[in-house]
Length: 273
Image (cartoon, rainbow, N blue to C red):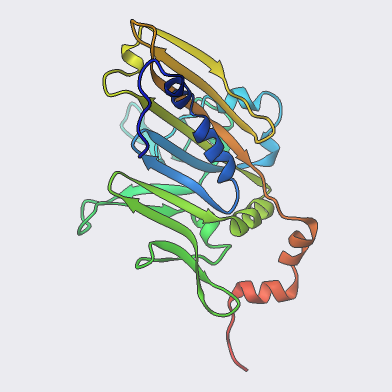
């Protein structure tokens, strides 16, 4: 981990402005794309959202996002005065989000836990909406969702990385692009990142400066806050927002998905005649 620049130095405020993290989001929007990160002060959480939702004042609405990594489907009900059950329904993962558009999103990763498990009680699963159409199967030894390629070799498509202080999940861009195309969706990567010195945080600041950090070219929209102590030195920084990632398939690549040769290789049908 790089050394934190000392107070009073320009490098310290630049560190709190988190330009390197914004560049990280740009650099990782292709290749092996992080879908989920929970590591110390960094939280990244991704969802699928229909393209048709991105109209009007969608940026302001999505900035109201709120979620937990364990959000999933659940049921609810309410009893009437005779204690009979009524209003029984299944709730979507983001039913009570402050963002109206977020309610229409589809989770990709779900952090689950089970006290009956031997060893670690928590584990990560991937939404079947993504894994099933792309013929992905979880391989415990690899800690990855895998498939067979055209040569019959195992490919790790969605990788789950466990670290002492956190967990991260990445996906191969080719499968992500294909899924976004097939579902007419975009990938939304929400992020919340806090940096602070050991002595102080945002809650202990005497003054805060807030501003928007919008990068329309790279479709990153964020709000930034920097806290200052009683000596007017920056002590903590917070960056919260989201990034939109579209599929990057060319027209020829899109048509290839529906070609007989591609369908045969994707189906992994090795039945001999």
